[in-house]
Amino acid sequence: MKVFRIGVGERKLACNARILGCDVGSFPFNYLGVVVRANMNLIKNWKLTAHISVIESLEKICRRFLWGGTDKKRKILWVAWPKVLA
Image 1 (cartoon, one colour):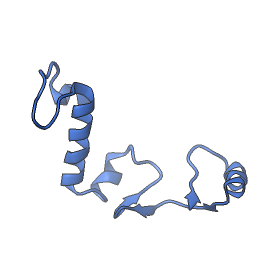
Image 2: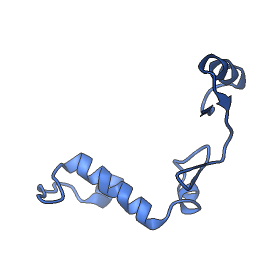
Image 3: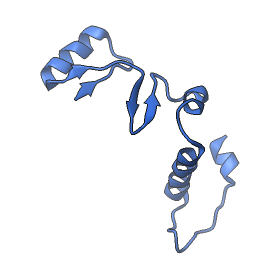
């Protein structure tokens, strides 16, 4: 198992890794076939790694979370998805 550093100093990461009995990881790394970089909030990092079907699946999960419903029964969509994304 590895721990990674985001917004934490190297010394604190090393200390926490030692306490947890983990190795220190570094970016980028692969997770489920997707390259994970330090800042996955940037669109450019997703364009290089995730297939469009993965992104569509993630958006579907987000829509279900916001609006509810199931595969068999849909609820009223009060706000257009592009406005939610904005």
